[in-house]
Image (tube, rainbow, N blue to C red; front, side, top):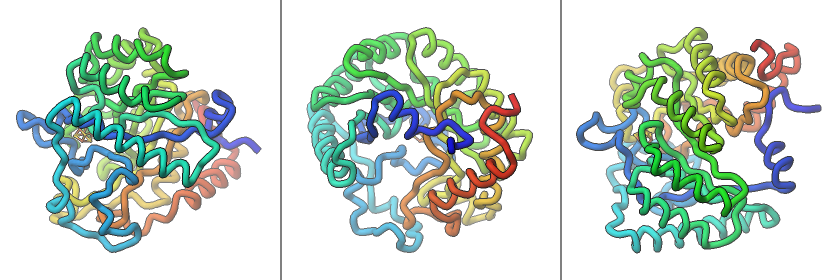
Length: 332
Ligand code: SF4
């Protein structure tokens, strides 16, 4: 029986006829929201900018499943690339590592290039062009996926992205919204508004670049009404895909300092099941749901520590929605 939401694996099979996996890359970008003029990044950002787990060789001393290591970030500095040549060399190494990892797990699959870490458009447009081209020249890829912020998409950058539409089947832009509530965006230090996100979506739609929005559920002060406002923004934005994250309190973040100092209730599986169902029911049925949960290595995760695994969560969400007869988009 079909899932009560539009699932990502099914979308990839429909579009490409086989599984497609991403090679997650760090292109050596920074992030405008971590610049000194601002307040040091989003409250939950751990200065790693969401790099792929298999690319973090500096963490090999720590195993998944070990206990929380509060000061790990002090021992793992951000690599700073000095030149385009060095960034390209680094990209080549990361792609080799990514291919080796994917070959060992999913040998018959297709691949996509995913500029995942930090703000993947935060550079001069010609530098972006060179880095994207360098990555795509390394093989055959179905998609180019670039993760960025709504305040980092000038027209010249959008032109660079569209220029790759004849190199791959799809060029995606992943765009962080995180919450449809400006009050929450201020609290987490996002450095942009809901309107900025909506404006960027309008410009990306005009360039025929599909968008995957990211949202976080489980902020301490957000209730059902706040989740509904986020759902409304997602619906209004016209994005084609969505990644849902449950709030993680990660070592080395301002959120972690706040949590260790004052404590707050961190969303558990029951709350996340409820909020995911609520959100799904209020967004369009055609939005592809690319993920439901955050993924943080256990040794860096302060909370939640006993959430349960992804398969259990997905099985429970499916069971809950099937039993209630609910579906994505049924309350729109
Ligand atoms: S936009 Fe991303 S990389 Fe930048 S501060 Fe926020 S979480 Fe970190």
